[in-house]
Image (cartoon, rainbow over all chains, first blue to last red; front, side, top):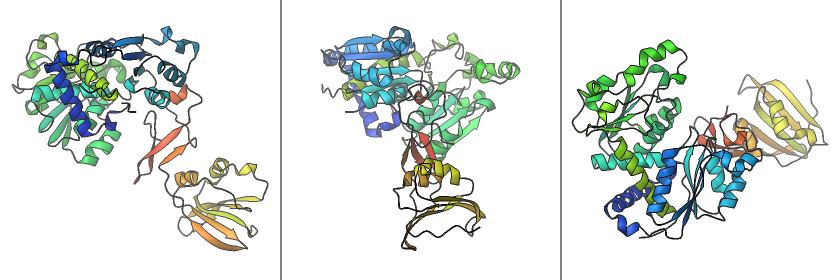
Length: 305
Length: 138
């Protein structure tokens, strides 16, 4: 039985296969509408995450399956002190597959060791969020038609942004990909991502503090939010925050075929004036999230259509 | 300083100076009935100083612990007053319940029964990371 806890557990072939399935579902939704009939997905969300939970639930419902679960720890037996291991064992009796979000890092891995059904990590603290990365990959594939020969700009909080780390690890497998890492000094990409991925694989990358300088070179711009609480002092935050907010004037020297991605939720890091720009992909990206989760559920349940 | 010669037992040599007591605890040598000697800061040709453990009995050793502390440690098995075997502990691929994850965001911080497992992620630099949260062992 297979689980998905970390994006790096998937081979490149498996990722490509999931993307192909997701694209087939998008093209032929009727073919899949009863694929998971009588199957149940348990969404065990120990912390609220509207978008991820709803996309998992929508994915299962569109496959003809049903959904059960909880959306915060206080409404589950964890409030009585039940361990993740026991919850996983118990829920395995009621559901065919589990999607788990937990504030503690590694909780879905623990669940996978005790569950008798597949477990999907739907986000464990600031650690892993593999279905977000799959969503990003599907979005890039659909927007660009390829996952190779791309210059990807990652902008904002690159130190704590787990989605950026996972994206770098995942995209490092594809040929002729290079990165421009745009962030304030305080929020540069951490050493372990540099050492264990970028330097190890020899992927070309450059670090800059200027979004404007990087902009003309980019095929993809992956935005994340620079959060006030990440700064040691308020003055630095105030000085820097506007540099990493995407506004129409900053797109002045961008390519016509740039794709702007964002894992959402957005607060203020992308101006709403950009939403109508055809290069803004983030809402199409959210849609991709449902389809890639459908493909993943099919794969883990070993359902062939 | 003279420590008596072992007839049948184990000499754990080339322990990095300062780690002898740590190893003594990890190996639960306090539970042994036989004579055990810990020599601290002995002169070393390979290093300037080293620690040595002498155990006057042949016991089962946890080589994972030894390898984790330092794969340059040597284990000498003594029989009849002669060294019959000299072993180097390999760098273990995984260690369980030897060190604890210190990350307060790790699931091990709230689920007490979970084993603390660290996996070797960089053989060259000897880096171990928690299997749950990927935090680097210090």
